Image (cartoon, rainbow, N blue to C red; front, side):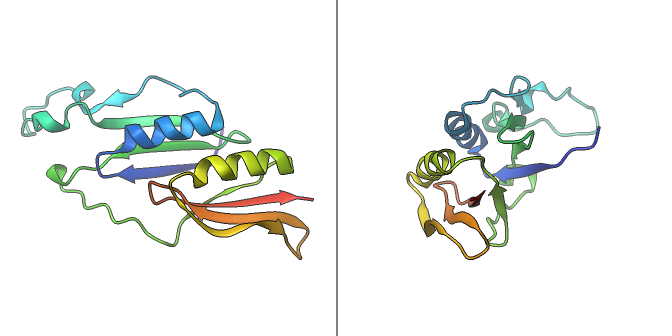
Length: 143
């Protein structure tokens, strides 16, 4: 079955981010969080740094309308350099103004509101923000 998801990379804070999103959306992970320590050793690969063993290898969290957030830690010790971009949003098309306001308030906590929720000319209740982990969210609730 085809699906669309959003995959997020964090520099060592995936678990904190996903526990926050789990609280905001009130959903549960689709499977237990997978850790780098769960990767079987391979003779062609060097051993993993002890500090990286408990980092998140993979996590999945359903949010709204069957959409999944997926994520992983991407530590520099494994050759990654995470740069949070300003060209990515997760667009939430909510069902009610109340749901929009609740999710907006929860995700805005510790973050920065870019555009407060307001009625827009295209017939939606709209707003945008950057959460405390640097992810950008748009809210679009059809009136």
